[in-house]
Picture 1 (cartoon, rainbow, N blue to C red):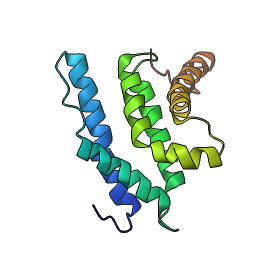
Picture 2 (picture 1 turned 30 degrees about the horizontal axis):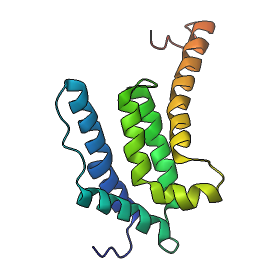
Picture 3 (picture 1 turned 135 degrees about the vertical axis):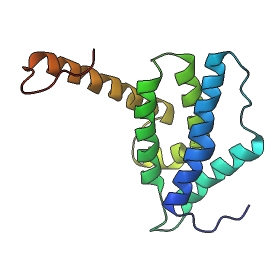
Length: 151
């Protein structure tokens, strides 16, 4: 499948529609007790190829850093949705790590970011830590200064 230059909006839309929405629907199916349909080899190859091309295009179309930030933000949102050590979280990490393997292989070592799995797990945990800090701060400050946050 020839790609040419992939602009950021097209690549991001492809990941939103064909990767993240699919992972979340599969996890929802598993949690509902039904069998997930999984990724076809062709669908996964297209996603991996998209990552590869977005990371190897010449500037200004090289999106390695933006992809890392993008999946980091996604991991923070997923960290709020799925509890630590849950099968849902592990499945999400596995699929995203496989899809973004090229990014891990070439961008992460250059930026000294460590393994993608651990980096994503840390991003997921950051959201929980930040939420807990907000709750503690809300309890310490009078309600006139900061309205009550969550239970």
